Length: 276
Ligand code: UTP
Image 1: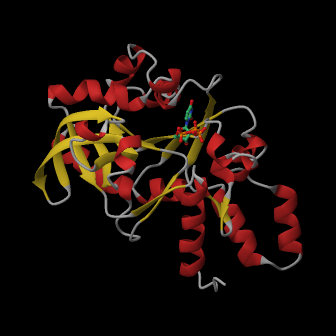
Image 2 (image 1 turned 180 degrees about the horizontal axis):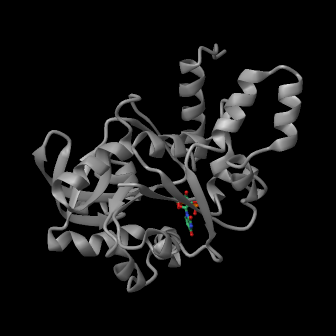
Image 3 (image 1 turned 90 degrees about the horizontal axis):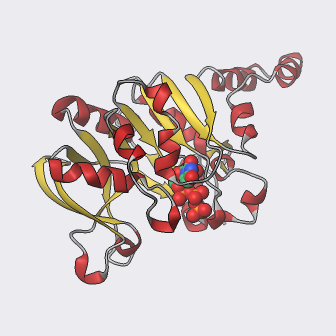
């Protein structure tokens, strides 16, 4: 699998007021924006072509993955070769393209904006605000891609969440196929306490067949009046066309203040900073 889509066009209202002028995907976790870690994960998973779905006020996402000639010259002139190399390498991480989602009509609608980029191939979706920290040789997207290759079915990345959290997410009915891989039988979005199927929820990553675009085109707006990706995935589940992969890494929802803070502390510790 070579293509990935990173939806990053949301309004980020949970991280206001910062997101009034800074995209949440650009909030720095220690010294690099959240979306840097996500592109890095895609590349480590074998992805070569990435489409980032952007929107108004998100041009600095494009600037970040572009060359910066004036800055680069200054760094070279100052003998800061190591920083120069790092800055230039960011522009060469992958072949990154952009398309604008003109109205914020939901994650499903954002993915639909990738239709012509994807063509007739399976592709990975990495949510632009979900940072997953995995062992270097086991990127979460790579685990999902391997499951897609093996089963030839759409793969949703899942994690176990708390009984309180499952009420805000989706709840899946699953049975194990092998270590970390499950058959998916049913899904309920934002279940009432007596509807919870399991504590497994779709979180942050999926690998989808190109047929998902036809389904998205027929998916009516759901929660919040937005076209939901999970609603389109739910339509495929009864056909037995979906497996779930409980990826190994730790997921941080950087679209929430708490998740962003947790990711920051985690990386800061990893980098050897002292948390006072
Ligand atoms: P979220 O639901 O977390 O994004 O979508 P949001 O709407 O920005 O969040 P809040 O609730 O207002 O804080 C998950 C991912 O999908 C993208 C977001 O940018 C995020 O990376 N997204 C969401 C889009 O690209 N387009 C949309 O219309 C909605």
